[in-house]
Length: 139
Image 1 (tube, one colour):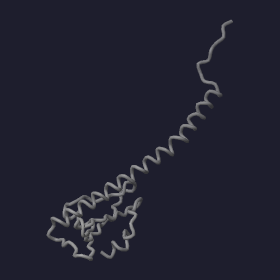
Image 2 (cartoon, one colour):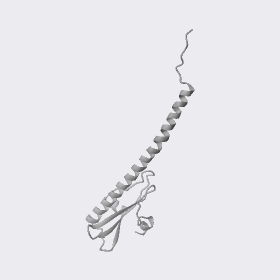
Image 3 (cartoon, helix red, strand yellow):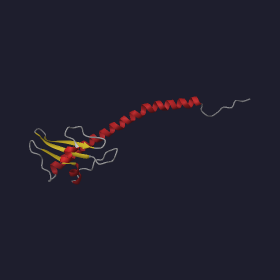
Image 4 (cartoon, one colour):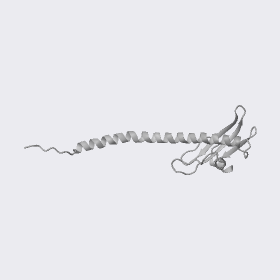
């Protein structure tokens, strides 16, 4: 009499596959999340540079902005840059809400002017002492 072979998997084989997939997911998922987080951080840093560059162009070429005198501080807000077509609104990458942003302009005796950007989003905020919603609301 011939032995009939089953074409299915045994319970042990299925458990082995599930265990291997579980181990792989425990390793891969946290690493993937770290990569996504790092990429989001890089995107926000690029947006900060774009903000500073747009503010510099606005300050140098717009007739509606006066550069600060020595010891003074001036601020350029994102609404000013957007309404003057120097840049587009910056949106939070996770929520899609509009970010708050401004640039602090100060005199630098060596290079001319410093343009320090502040970006405040739902998931990210520039790590500088003067970057806060309180300062922005006073502008």
